[in-house]
Length: 473
Image (cartoon, rainbow, N blue to C red; front, side, top):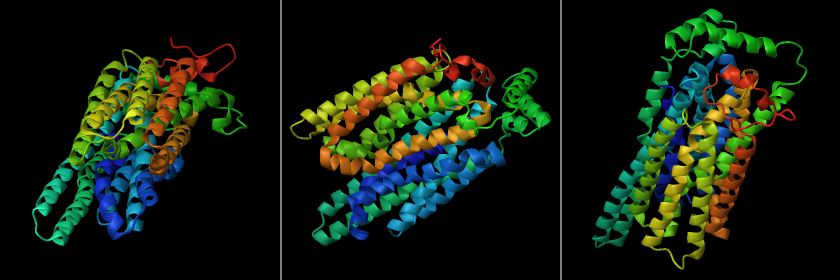
Protein backbone atom coordinates (compact mmCIF):
# COMPACT_ATOMS: atom_id res chain seq x y z
CA UNK A 1 0.00 0.00 0.00
CA UNK A 2 2.86 2.39 0.77
CA UNK A 3 4.36 1.52 -2.59
CA UNK A 4 1.21 2.90 -4.23
CA UNK A 5 2.83 6.28 -3.58
CA UNK A 6 5.09 5.33 -6.47
CA UNK A 7 2.01 5.12 -8.70
CA UNK A 8 1.15 8.73 -7.88
CA UNK A 9 4.76 9.82 -8.36
CA UNK A 10 4.77 8.18 -11.80
CA UNK A 11 1.52 9.90 -12.71
CA UNK A 12 3.03 13.21 -11.49
CA UNK A 13 5.94 12.81 -13.90
CA UNK A 14 4.22 11.15 -16.85
CA UNK A 15 0.72 12.57 -17.16
CA UNK A 16 1.79 15.79 -18.88
CA UNK A 17 3.32 13.95 -21.87
CA UNK A 18 -0.02 12.81 -23.30
CA UNK A 19 -1.85 15.99 -22.29
CA UNK A 20 0.79 18.43 -23.54
CA UNK A 21 0.06 18.41 -27.32
CA UNK A 22 -3.65 19.10 -26.69
CA UNK A 23 -2.99 21.63 -23.94
CA UNK A 24 -0.43 23.42 -26.10
CA UNK A 25 -2.83 23.61 -29.07
CA UNK A 26 -5.81 24.93 -27.10
CA UNK A 27 -4.02 27.14 -24.55
CA UNK A 28 -2.08 28.96 -27.26
CA UNK A 29 -5.42 30.05 -28.75
CA UNK A 30 -7.60 30.48 -25.67
CA UNK A 31 -5.00 31.72 -23.15
CA UNK A 32 -2.24 33.01 -25.48
CA UNK A 33 0.45 30.86 -23.83
CA UNK A 34 3.97 31.02 -25.29
CA UNK A 35 6.64 28.28 -25.31
CA UNK A 36 8.20 29.46 -22.04
CA UNK A 37 4.86 29.41 -20.21
CA UNK A 38 4.17 25.90 -21.50
CA UNK A 39 7.61 24.85 -20.22
CA UNK A 40 6.72 26.32 -16.82
CA UNK A 41 3.50 24.26 -16.76
CA UNK A 42 5.56 21.12 -17.45
CA UNK A 43 8.21 22.06 -14.90
CA UNK A 44 5.73 23.25 -12.24
CA UNK A 45 5.20 19.76 -10.89
CA UNK A 46 8.95 19.53 -10.34
CA UNK A 47 9.11 22.97 -8.74
CA UNK A 48 6.26 22.04 -6.39
CA UNK A 49 8.25 18.95 -5.52
CA UNK A 50 11.29 21.11 -4.75
CA UNK A 51 9.27 23.29 -2.37
CA UNK A 52 7.70 20.39 -0.47
CA UNK A 53 11.04 18.55 -0.31
CA UNK A 54 12.33 21.39 1.88
CA UNK A 55 9.85 20.43 4.60
CA UNK A 56 9.31 16.70 4.02
CA UNK A 57 12.08 15.55 6.37
CA UNK A 58 11.07 17.87 9.20
CA UNK A 59 7.39 17.00 8.83
CA UNK A 60 8.06 13.26 8.84
CA UNK A 61 10.26 13.61 11.95
CA UNK A 62 7.71 15.66 13.88
CA UNK A 63 4.43 14.10 12.77
CA UNK A 64 5.58 10.59 11.85
CA UNK A 65 5.91 8.82 8.52
CA UNK A 66 2.25 7.72 8.31
CA UNK A 67 0.59 11.18 8.65
CA UNK A 68 2.82 12.59 5.92
CA UNK A 69 1.87 9.69 3.63
CA UNK A 70 -1.80 10.58 4.18
CA UNK A 71 -1.09 14.27 3.56
CA UNK A 72 0.70 13.56 0.29
CA UNK A 73 -2.27 11.55 -1.02
CA UNK A 74 -4.71 14.28 -0.01
CA UNK A 75 -2.68 16.95 -1.83
CA UNK A 76 -2.57 14.86 -4.98
CA UNK A 77 -6.33 14.24 -4.89
CA UNK A 78 -6.98 17.96 -4.41
CA UNK A 79 -4.72 18.91 -7.34
CA UNK A 80 -6.76 16.95 -9.91
CA UNK A 81 -9.93 19.11 -9.96
CA UNK A 82 -7.82 22.29 -9.72
CA UNK A 83 -6.02 21.34 -12.97
CA UNK A 84 -8.93 19.76 -14.84
CA UNK A 85 -11.26 22.71 -14.17
CA UNK A 86 -8.61 25.39 -14.84
CA UNK A 87 -9.84 28.34 -16.89
CA UNK A 88 -6.48 30.05 -17.39
CA UNK A 89 -2.72 29.93 -16.92
CA UNK A 90 -2.76 30.80 -13.18
CA UNK A 91 -5.06 28.00 -11.96
CA UNK A 92 -3.34 25.49 -14.24
CA UNK A 93 0.08 26.41 -12.85
CA UNK A 94 -1.26 26.34 -9.27
CA UNK A 95 -2.73 22.86 -9.74
CA UNK A 96 0.52 21.54 -11.18
CA UNK A 97 2.46 23.05 -8.26
CA UNK A 98 0.07 21.34 -5.84
CA UNK A 99 0.54 18.04 -7.65
CA UNK A 100 4.29 18.53 -7.40
CA UNK A 101 4.06 19.25 -3.68
CA UNK A 102 2.46 15.84 -3.27
CA UNK A 103 5.27 14.25 -5.30
CA UNK A 104 7.97 15.88 -3.16
CA UNK A 105 6.48 14.45 0.02
CA UNK A 106 6.02 11.02 -1.59
CA UNK A 107 9.59 10.97 -2.93
CA UNK A 108 11.01 11.42 0.58
CA UNK A 109 8.56 9.63 2.84
CA UNK A 110 7.64 6.47 0.91
CA UNK A 111 11.26 5.22 0.40
CA UNK A 112 12.04 6.30 3.97
CA UNK A 113 9.01 4.42 5.33
CA UNK A 114 9.74 1.26 3.34
CA UNK A 115 13.44 1.22 4.27
CA UNK A 116 12.64 1.62 7.97
CA UNK A 117 9.86 -0.97 7.95
CA UNK A 118 11.33 -3.79 5.85
CA UNK A 119 14.04 -6.23 6.97
CA UNK A 120 17.47 -6.65 5.30
CA UNK A 121 16.40 -9.79 3.42
CA UNK A 122 13.68 -8.07 1.40
CA UNK A 123 14.41 -4.35 1.71
CA UNK A 124 15.75 -4.19 -1.84
CA UNK A 125 12.73 -5.89 -3.42
CA UNK A 126 10.28 -4.15 -1.11
CA UNK A 127 11.62 -0.67 -1.71
CA UNK A 128 11.79 -1.46 -5.43
CA UNK A 129 7.99 -1.85 -5.32
CA UNK A 130 7.93 1.95 -5.11
CA UNK A 131 9.74 2.22 -8.45
CA UNK A 132 7.72 -0.64 -9.99
CA UNK A 133 4.45 1.12 -9.22
CA UNK A 134 6.01 4.42 -10.32
CA UNK A 135 6.58 2.89 -13.75
CA UNK A 136 3.02 1.52 -13.68
CA UNK A 137 1.88 5.11 -13.11
CA UNK A 138 3.87 6.20 -16.15
CA UNK A 139 2.29 3.46 -18.28
CA UNK A 140 -1.21 4.35 -17.06
CA UNK A 141 -0.58 8.00 -17.91
CA UNK A 142 0.71 7.05 -21.36
CA UNK A 143 -2.28 4.82 -22.08
CA UNK A 144 -4.62 7.62 -21.05
CA UNK A 145 -2.77 9.93 -23.44
CA UNK A 146 -3.00 7.37 -26.26
CA UNK A 147 -6.74 6.81 -25.68
CA UNK A 148 -7.62 10.49 -25.75
CA UNK A 149 -5.19 11.11 -28.60
CA UNK A 150 -7.18 8.63 -30.69
CA UNK A 151 -10.36 10.52 -29.86
CA UNK A 152 -8.75 13.74 -31.13
CA UNK A 153 -7.65 11.93 -34.31
CA UNK A 154 -11.25 10.79 -34.91
CA UNK A 155 -12.49 14.35 -34.37
CA UNK A 156 -9.88 15.62 -36.85
CA UNK A 157 -10.99 13.04 -39.45
CA UNK A 158 -14.62 14.06 -38.97
CA UNK A 159 -13.71 17.76 -39.24
CA UNK A 160 -11.99 17.08 -42.56
CA UNK A 161 -15.29 15.84 -44.01
CA UNK A 162 -17.25 18.95 -42.99
CA UNK A 163 -18.04 21.60 -45.59
CA UNK A 164 -17.55 24.47 -43.14
CA UNK A 165 -13.81 24.90 -42.20
CA UNK A 166 -14.68 27.04 -39.17
CA UNK A 167 -17.02 24.35 -37.81
CA UNK A 168 -14.30 21.73 -38.36
CA UNK A 169 -11.71 23.83 -36.53
CA UNK A 170 -14.14 24.34 -33.65
CA UNK A 171 -14.79 20.59 -33.45
CA UNK A 172 -11.07 19.80 -33.24
CA UNK A 173 -10.48 22.56 -30.70
CA UNK A 174 -13.26 21.23 -28.44
CA UNK A 175 -11.93 17.66 -28.73
CA UNK A 176 -8.41 18.77 -27.80
CA UNK A 177 -9.63 20.87 -24.85
CA UNK A 178 -11.73 17.98 -23.53
CA UNK A 179 -8.85 15.51 -24.06
CA UNK A 180 -6.26 17.15 -21.80
CA UNK A 181 -8.82 17.78 -19.06
CA UNK A 182 -10.08 14.17 -19.14
CA UNK A 183 -6.49 12.87 -19.03
CA UNK A 184 -6.10 14.59 -15.66
CA UNK A 185 -9.53 13.52 -14.38
CA UNK A 186 -8.68 9.82 -14.68
CA UNK A 187 -5.86 10.25 -12.12
CA UNK A 188 -8.26 11.09 -9.29
CA UNK A 189 -9.11 7.46 -8.46
CA UNK A 190 -5.54 6.32 -7.61
CA UNK A 191 -5.05 9.46 -5.52
CA UNK A 192 -8.08 8.66 -3.40
CA UNK A 193 -7.09 4.97 -3.15
CA UNK A 194 -3.63 5.84 -1.82
CA UNK A 195 -5.02 8.36 0.67
CA UNK A 196 -7.51 5.87 2.12
CA UNK A 197 -4.96 3.04 2.12
CA UNK A 198 -2.32 5.11 3.93
CA UNK A 199 -4.73 5.58 6.83
CA UNK A 200 -4.50 1.83 7.51
CA UNK A 201 -0.69 1.55 7.57
CA UNK A 202 1.31 1.01 10.80
CA UNK A 203 3.82 3.67 11.83
CA UNK A 204 7.54 3.11 11.14
CA UNK A 205 9.07 1.14 14.07
CA UNK A 206 12.33 3.08 13.81
CA UNK A 207 10.49 6.41 14.07
CA UNK A 208 8.60 5.08 17.10
CA UNK A 209 11.85 3.96 18.76
CA UNK A 210 13.55 7.31 18.20
CA UNK A 211 10.54 9.03 19.79
CA UNK A 212 11.01 6.93 22.96
CA UNK A 213 8.15 4.53 22.20
CA UNK A 214 10.10 1.27 22.36
CA UNK A 215 7.12 -0.93 23.20
CA UNK A 216 5.11 0.45 20.28
CA UNK A 217 8.13 -0.15 18.03
CA UNK A 218 8.39 -3.74 19.27
CA UNK A 219 4.67 -4.31 18.67
CA UNK A 220 4.95 -3.00 15.11
CA UNK A 221 7.99 -5.20 14.38
CA UNK A 222 6.05 -8.23 15.64
CA UNK A 223 2.96 -7.25 13.65
CA UNK A 224 4.74 -6.85 10.32
CA UNK A 225 7.22 -9.72 10.91
CA UNK A 226 9.96 -8.01 8.90
CA UNK A 227 12.80 -8.94 11.29
CA UNK A 228 13.16 -10.34 14.85
CA UNK A 229 12.11 -7.58 17.23
CA UNK A 230 14.74 -8.20 19.93
CA UNK A 231 17.92 -7.91 17.79
CA UNK A 232 16.38 -5.07 15.78
CA UNK A 233 15.65 -3.01 18.92
CA UNK A 234 19.15 -3.69 20.31
CA UNK A 235 20.71 -2.49 17.06
CA UNK A 236 18.58 0.68 17.15
CA UNK A 237 19.66 1.30 20.74
CA UNK A 238 23.37 0.92 19.85
CA UNK A 239 23.01 3.43 17.02
CA UNK A 240 21.23 5.92 19.29
CA UNK A 241 23.95 5.51 21.94
CA UNK A 242 26.71 6.04 19.37
CA UNK A 243 24.99 9.23 18.18
CA UNK A 244 24.45 10.66 21.67
CA UNK A 245 26.73 13.03 23.52
CA UNK A 246 28.13 16.44 22.72
CA UNK A 247 27.43 17.31 19.08
CA UNK A 248 28.24 20.96 18.35
CA UNK A 249 27.64 20.83 14.59
CA UNK A 250 24.29 20.36 12.82
CA UNK A 251 23.73 16.74 11.78
CA UNK A 252 24.48 17.08 8.07
CA UNK A 253 27.81 18.81 8.79
CA UNK A 254 29.26 16.23 11.16
CA UNK A 255 32.25 14.43 9.72
CA UNK A 256 30.81 10.94 10.05
CA UNK A 257 27.74 11.97 8.03
CA UNK A 258 29.28 14.13 5.30
CA UNK A 259 30.47 11.35 2.99
CA UNK A 260 27.23 9.27 2.84
CA UNK A 261 25.17 12.46 2.55
CA UNK A 262 27.22 13.87 -0.34
CA UNK A 263 27.33 10.47 -2.07
CA UNK A 264 23.52 10.16 -1.92
CA UNK A 265 23.16 13.73 -3.25
CA UNK A 266 25.57 13.02 -6.11
CA UNK A 267 23.69 9.86 -7.10
CA UNK A 268 20.31 11.62 -7.04
CA UNK A 269 21.64 14.61 -9.02
CA UNK A 270 23.23 12.36 -11.66
CA UNK A 271 20.00 10.37 -11.84
CA UNK A 272 18.14 13.46 -13.05
CA UNK A 273 21.02 14.84 -15.12
CA UNK A 274 20.53 11.89 -17.49
CA UNK A 275 17.39 13.78 -18.59
CA UNK A 276 15.00 11.01 -17.58
CA UNK A 277 12.16 13.24 -16.34
CA UNK A 278 12.42 15.54 -19.36
CA UNK A 279 12.35 12.55 -21.72
CA UNK A 280 9.29 11.17 -19.93
CA UNK A 281 7.54 14.54 -19.96
CA UNK A 282 8.44 15.51 -23.55
CA UNK A 283 8.49 12.06 -25.18
CA UNK A 284 5.51 12.76 -27.46
CA UNK A 285 7.11 16.09 -28.43
CA UNK A 286 10.47 14.36 -29.12
CA UNK A 287 8.90 11.64 -31.27
CA UNK A 288 6.89 14.25 -33.20
CA UNK A 289 10.19 16.02 -33.96
CA UNK A 290 11.72 12.71 -34.99
CA UNK A 291 8.93 12.04 -37.50
CA UNK A 292 6.17 10.08 -35.75
CA UNK A 293 2.79 11.75 -36.37
CA UNK A 294 -0.20 12.21 -34.04
CA UNK A 295 -1.27 9.18 -32.05
CA UNK A 296 1.71 7.17 -33.34
CA UNK A 297 3.87 9.29 -31.04
CA UNK A 298 1.43 8.51 -28.19
CA UNK A 299 1.82 4.82 -29.04
CA UNK A 300 5.60 5.23 -28.86
CA UNK A 301 5.16 6.91 -25.48
CA UNK A 302 3.07 3.97 -24.20
CA UNK A 303 5.61 1.48 -25.58
CA UNK A 304 8.52 3.28 -23.93
CA UNK A 305 6.78 3.28 -20.57
CA UNK A 306 5.86 -0.38 -21.04
CA UNK A 307 9.58 -1.14 -21.42
CA UNK A 308 10.15 0.83 -18.23
CA UNK A 309 7.56 -1.25 -16.37
CA UNK A 310 8.88 -4.62 -17.59
CA UNK A 311 12.54 -3.81 -16.88
CA UNK A 312 11.68 -2.45 -13.45
CA UNK A 313 10.11 -5.84 -12.75
CA UNK A 314 13.43 -7.41 -13.78
CA UNK A 315 15.25 -5.04 -11.42
CA UNK A 316 12.96 -6.05 -8.53
CA UNK A 317 14.08 -9.65 -9.08
CA UNK A 318 17.79 -8.81 -9.44
CA UNK A 319 18.35 -6.12 -6.82
CA UNK A 320 18.75 -8.47 -3.83
CA UNK A 321 20.77 -10.98 -5.89
CA UNK A 322 23.13 -8.89 -8.03
CA UNK A 323 23.29 -5.92 -5.68
CA UNK A 324 22.88 -2.18 -6.02
CA UNK A 325 26.34 -1.33 -7.33
CA UNK A 326 26.33 -3.82 -10.22
CA UNK A 327 22.92 -2.66 -11.46
CA UNK A 328 23.87 1.01 -11.22
CA UNK A 329 27.04 0.45 -13.28
CA UNK A 330 25.20 -1.57 -15.93
CA UNK A 331 22.35 0.92 -16.08
CA UNK A 332 24.38 4.14 -16.27
CA UNK A 333 26.64 2.62 -18.95
CA UNK A 334 23.64 1.58 -21.06
CA UNK A 335 22.06 5.03 -20.65
CA UNK A 336 25.20 6.72 -21.97
CA UNK A 337 25.30 4.52 -25.10
CA UNK A 338 21.58 4.94 -25.85
CA UNK A 339 21.72 8.74 -25.52
CA UNK A 340 24.75 9.02 -27.81
CA UNK A 341 22.94 6.95 -30.47
CA UNK A 342 19.77 9.06 -30.18
CA UNK A 343 21.79 12.27 -30.48
CA UNK A 344 23.60 10.91 -33.53
CA UNK A 345 20.26 10.12 -35.19
CA UNK A 346 19.05 13.68 -34.75
CA UNK A 347 22.41 15.07 -35.85
CA UNK A 348 22.65 12.98 -39.00
CA UNK A 349 19.03 12.86 -40.21
CA UNK A 350 18.40 14.98 -43.36
CA UNK A 351 14.67 15.25 -42.54
CA UNK A 352 12.27 13.64 -40.04
CA UNK A 353 10.36 10.57 -41.27
CA UNK A 354 8.32 7.80 -39.72
CA UNK A 355 11.26 5.38 -40.06
CA UNK A 356 13.56 7.90 -38.39
CA UNK A 357 10.97 8.37 -35.65
CA UNK A 358 10.89 4.66 -34.85
CA UNK A 359 14.71 4.50 -34.79
CA UNK A 360 14.75 7.31 -32.22
CA UNK A 361 12.02 5.48 -30.28
CA UNK A 362 14.20 2.33 -30.27
CA UNK A 363 17.14 4.30 -28.83
CA UNK A 364 14.90 5.77 -26.16
CA UNK A 365 13.61 2.29 -25.36
CA UNK A 366 17.24 1.26 -24.77
CA UNK A 367 17.67 4.32 -22.57
CA UNK A 368 14.54 3.43 -20.59
CA UNK A 369 15.51 -0.24 -20.18
CA UNK A 370 18.95 0.75 -18.86
CA UNK A 371 17.51 3.34 -16.52
CA UNK A 372 14.83 0.99 -15.16
CA UNK A 373 17.13 -1.93 -14.44
CA UNK A 374 19.69 0.19 -12.59
CA UNK A 375 19.24 3.85 -11.55
CA UNK A 376 15.44 3.69 -11.50
CA UNK A 377 15.40 1.25 -8.58
CA UNK A 378 18.84 1.60 -7.02
CA UNK A 379 18.93 5.38 -6.68
CA UNK A 380 15.94 5.27 -4.30
CA UNK A 381 17.64 2.48 -2.35
CA UNK A 382 20.89 4.43 -2.15
CA UNK A 383 18.96 7.45 -0.89
CA UNK A 384 17.35 5.54 1.98
CA UNK A 385 20.19 3.12 2.79
CA UNK A 386 23.20 5.43 2.79
CA UNK A 387 21.74 8.04 5.15
CA UNK A 388 22.55 7.38 8.85
CA UNK A 389 19.60 7.24 11.25
CA UNK A 390 20.26 10.63 12.86
CA UNK A 391 20.06 12.50 9.54
CA UNK A 392 17.97 10.07 7.48
CA UNK A 393 14.78 12.06 7.07
CA UNK A 394 16.37 15.51 6.70
CA UNK A 395 19.25 14.13 4.63
CA UNK A 396 16.84 12.42 2.27
CA UNK A 397 14.84 15.63 2.07
CA UNK A 398 17.89 17.69 1.05
CA UNK A 399 19.11 15.02 -1.38
CA UNK A 400 15.70 14.87 -3.05
CA UNK A 401 15.71 18.66 -3.17
CA UNK A 402 18.98 18.52 -5.14
CA UNK A 403 17.43 15.85 -7.36
CA UNK A 404 14.36 17.97 -8.09
CA UNK A 405 16.31 21.19 -8.64
CA UNK A 406 18.35 19.48 -11.35
CA UNK A 407 15.21 17.96 -12.88
CA UNK A 408 13.30 21.26 -12.75
CA UNK A 409 16.14 23.21 -14.38
CA UNK A 410 16.38 20.70 -17.24
CA UNK A 411 12.60 20.57 -17.81
CA UNK A 412 12.19 24.36 -17.72
CA UNK A 413 15.06 24.90 -20.17
CA UNK A 414 14.19 22.04 -22.52
CA UNK A 415 11.96 23.71 -25.13
CA UNK A 416 14.02 26.93 -25.42
CA UNK A 417 17.28 24.91 -25.63
CA UNK A 418 15.93 22.58 -28.30
CA UNK A 419 14.62 25.55 -30.29
CA UNK A 420 18.08 27.13 -30.19
CA UNK A 421 20.51 24.19 -30.37
CA UNK A 422 18.41 21.22 -31.55
CA UNK A 423 17.54 17.84 -30.04
CA UNK A 424 21.00 16.35 -30.62
CA UNK A 425 22.69 18.82 -28.26
CA UNK A 426 20.37 17.86 -25.41
CA UNK A 427 20.97 14.13 -25.90
CA UNK A 428 24.76 14.54 -26.01
CA UNK A 429 24.78 16.68 -22.85
CA UNK A 430 22.71 14.06 -21.01
CA UNK A 431 25.09 11.34 -22.23
CA UNK A 432 28.01 13.23 -20.67
CA UNK A 433 26.18 13.32 -17.34
CA UNK A 434 25.51 9.56 -17.58
CA UNK A 435 29.25 8.95 -18.09
CA UNK A 436 29.97 10.97 -14.93
CA UNK A 437 27.33 8.92 -13.10
CA UNK A 438 29.12 5.69 -14.09
CA UNK A 439 32.44 6.99 -12.76
CA UNK A 440 31.00 8.13 -9.41
CA UNK A 441 29.40 4.73 -8.80
CA UNK A 442 32.57 2.90 -9.89
CA UNK A 443 34.82 4.93 -7.61
CA UNK A 444 32.77 5.61 -4.49
CA UNK A 445 29.65 3.47 -4.02
CA UNK A 446 29.87 0.47 -1.63
CA UNK A 447 27.55 -2.53 -1.79
CA UNK A 448 24.75 -2.55 0.83
CA UNK A 449 22.93 -5.74 -0.19
CA UNK A 450 21.90 -7.96 2.73
CA UNK A 451 22.84 -5.49 5.48
CA UNK A 452 20.52 -3.92 8.05
CA UNK A 453 20.32 -0.13 8.18
CA UNK A 454 22.29 -0.19 11.44
CA UNK A 455 25.04 -2.38 9.89
CA UNK A 456 25.30 -0.02 6.92
CA UNK A 457 25.66 2.96 9.26
CA UNK A 458 28.36 1.20 11.27
CA UNK A 459 30.44 0.45 8.15
CA UNK A 460 33.59 2.65 8.39
CA UNK A 461 34.00 2.69 4.61
CA UNK A 462 30.92 4.88 4.34
CA UNK A 463 32.59 7.62 6.39
CA UNK A 464 35.12 8.34 3.66
CA UNK A 465 38.07 8.02 6.05
CA UNK A 466 41.58 8.12 4.55
CA UNK A 467 42.73 4.71 3.49
CA UNK A 468 39.18 3.34 3.73
CA UNK A 469 37.86 3.95 0.24
CA UNK A 470 34.48 2.31 -0.28
CA UNK A 471 34.73 -0.86 -2.33
CA UNK A 472 32.21 -2.83 -4.30
CA UNK A 473 32.43 -5.86 -2.02
